[in-house]
Image (cartoon, rainbow, N blue to C red; front, side, top):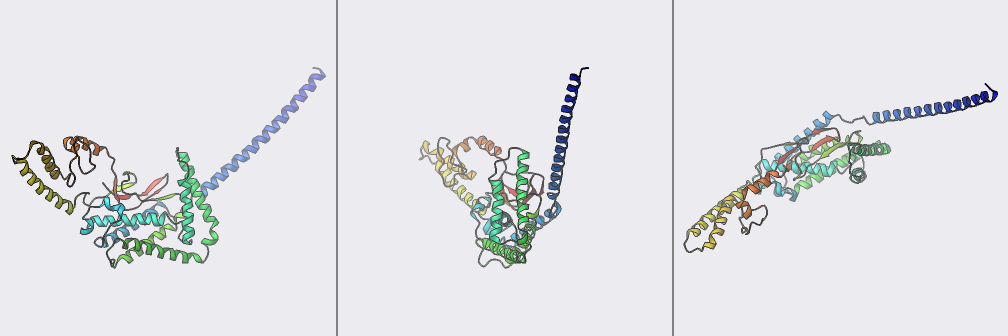
Length: 375
């Protein structure tokens, strides 16, 4: 082997050694980065595994809240004088006058919706000043409301983590406020404010003077609501508190069907109107048999009689040529009952009234199914 060859081998060996040294250094640097990322992820998971209340405690408290709402609704069932507009189509016309089970359900519905929309969805933490608490809650809602629609489970989990991290970081930044002597005063003022607002919201629709046990029932409800609300911000999970409005599609995994109230359309008012319609139909039937009537009048009279007997077309004339006149009745519904029946069967089941609150852990489990009455 020549001296030139030896020098080339030495040179190649030196280059290979330098390359090996660089690769080894790069490998260990990346290995350190991987370990740092693993540790960061572990710490993050550890910090996000904290729960203020466990599932059973949330379930117990919300079931207790449902019981208190039901007790108050039962005690004021005969004291209603009107209903909010959004409940009109869910309650029979004579329900307010009779003041029975249907008004107990309506009371549960009204109070449950108010608690979700005017407390749980409006304020961030009971120990904060109310305007600041409302502003922070608005920010939290907007993070999700204005985020792009999640297309995958991963995107939904990312958005949930984003909301939770913002909430926990905000609480860390408010520690000086949340540890101040002002907190008990803020919580007491917040509790009194909710009591006054709920009583005022109910009083608008109740007889004057309101029932004597209204204030006591509201007091117990609001006290329990505040004791729940104080745990929600510090949760490492996203606890979802929902109220399902009338017309919402029924979801078996998040709702439980209740019974015990009259179906819609069954009321004293409707029965009296039906009797009057039948009497009117009898007189029209007499006119039909009168030879003085022309043949062209008979179809109209027969349709009027049939409409009265079936409870349709009470005040409206039946349109000709099978054109629909809406839910009240139509000539096509008389001539082709199978079409309307098929259309009715195709409609998905809907919520008539949600008499309680639904609670779940977003992306994980349902803690409390919302009690609902179906259409």
